[in-house]
Structure formats: structure tokens, C-alpha cells
Length: 71
Image (cartoon, rainbow, N blue to C red; front, side, top):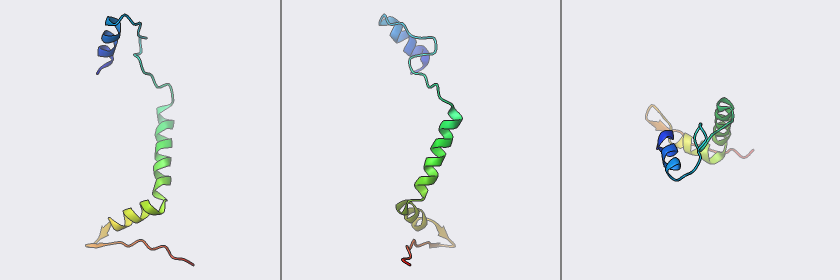
């Protein structure tokens, strides 16, 4: 659905629609993407994610094995 379709549908229903449409995000898009990237990097640090990434990554036909060394 485009903004035009939403505007027409709302106008037909007798509603007043702001010029920018019904839904608007007022935040900084760059800041949002930085937060998203930061969260993805932190997610990669969890043991389950690391184990999955290592066990599904190969080099020269061999897969890696994730071991937690208890010291």
C-alpha cells in the first residue's frame, strides 16, 4: 500500500490524514542503523551464536569445532 492509497482510503472514510501520511518515524536513521549493528555484534559474542557460526564455517573442506576451555 502506498502513501497515496492510504490517504485515499482514509479520505473516503471521512478521516483527516496528515500530509506526511499516517505513520512517521522522526528519529535519526543513521543512529538506528548503528544501534542495530551494535546489537548484532553483541549477539555474535554469545556462546550459542559462536558455536553455530564455527560449526557451519569451513576451511579447505573441514569445519571448525567450538570448545570452551575450562581453565
